[in-house]
Amino acid sequence: MSAALFGVSSGFCCCLTLFGQAPSGAIAGVVTDRGSNTPLRRAIVTLSTLEAQPQDAVAWTDANGRFGFGYLPAGRYELRVTKNGYQPSTYGTEDTRRLPRSIQLAAGEVRNDLVFRMQLVNSVSGLIVDEDGDPVAGIQILAMRQGWQRQKRELLPGPAAMSDSSGRYRITGLPPGSYAFVAAGANRPALKLNPEVSAGPAPPRYMYGEQYYPGTDQAASARLTTVEAGREYSQIDFRLTAQPVTSVQGKVVLPAGVKTEQVSINAGNADLWNRMNFGTGVSNPDHVFRFDQFPPGSYTLVAQATAEGKQYRGVQKIEVGPEGARDLAIALEAGIDLQGSVSVEGPDAGKFPAAFVTLVPGDGISWTGPQLRANAGKEGRFTLTGVPPGVWDINAGPVPPGGYIKSMYLGDQDVLTEEMVIRATTSAQLKIVLGTQGASLSGDVNGEQPGRSAVLAAPDGKFRHVLSFYRYAVSDGQGHFQIKGMRPGNYKLYAFEEFDPQSIQDPEFLAPFEPAGIAVTLREGENPAQKLRVIPAANAGHTGGTP
Image 1 (cartoon, helix red, strand yellow):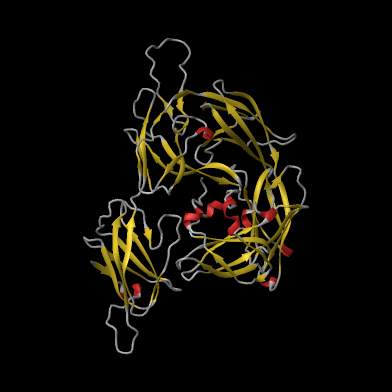
Image 2 (tube, helix red, strand yellow):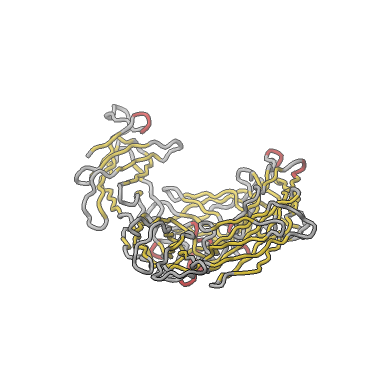
């Protein structure tokens, strides 16, 4: 067994206990392979203090998988293990959703019974071939996890790999869960062999489109594969079909009287916009456009223009079949100058003036124009220029320490709890109020064993769908937790042994746990402490964003 203790940086003193000093302790254990139970040599073990300024020491396991740290003062520690080819492990975690536990070491205490059973990194691999069985290189394969966006079930792009010259790919280290795998040709031309060539019109061109495993071009029909920790899935294969490309053409229609030469248009795959989108030029003076290499599928077209300092945008969803799409007309709508105010209320409000307001797309459609951000001026007034029609999420700040966003209104509409939809005709002002004194809650979690838990405060009643109202915190080794900066209101409190923060996007996630929730009404400032019972992992089941 070998250990590296780094003088000042480690904080651990390699010296004998002197007269009058508290006796030192030790932490030791063994690292094994979870599947075979054989010891793992040269795994890297890191011991960290859980203090305001954490300090580390490092050890390497010997041929028997053993490690040890000596001459340790009393205190709380965290222990982590890493090794190539294995998933990182932290003491107290049985899988990626389990929260780590701290080690409370008393003066002179020796803990030599710690066991780490490391899980091999999982992998998904396969072969990409064409219709003739020949390998296809340069195809991107994405692991898309079933999750939730704005309370709607969707496939969310995750890790990816590229097929090599032999058509093989490999994705490693996927968190356990359910995935749909898609081979995306990225508009890659396909070579289709023709035994006969005749004079006349040019032969049709072909491309590889998107194919979801095990052989569909529709995300809704994709098969979900359950990926478990430490397992290898080696036959997620794709046989791609070369599709004849077609054309999409139309024109961009500007509002009457508007003239500009700065018009652009982008087309994106409806399911893979963030990974699969491309653009083309727009011809003047009629602003016509044409895409000549469009595989059949579902797409979103986004046209943008700038004229006399104003922003214009138009969005249209289309279905492209074998015959393509003709005579499209994408009407541009003018962006608006969204005016409003942002103020701060509560104790010491004058110390925390609001400084900015920003908007980001809330409909999943990217915005390639200037950043929509405004600085707050006198009396908190601001103007966001060129806000195009669409759904927009709002951010204002800085929020005072321990404070919260108290309200957001576009005219009479509560856009803190509802979507803010901007139209070319929108004239209402946006009024934002920040509070300096959010609700604060502390308490303790009791379980069969002391350890960390994820404490979730979920808004109850009509605000259950407002994700920005959710708060969670991780309790310490003694089960104590504290949550600050909450919006006052009605909540239910839960303490989970296993928890995935993305779970809150699933509107049905909390339904099985309702009986275990503790109902509270929180007011500004400190609220009465609460005592919670932890929901064990065996009862919680899978609390991730996938079923």
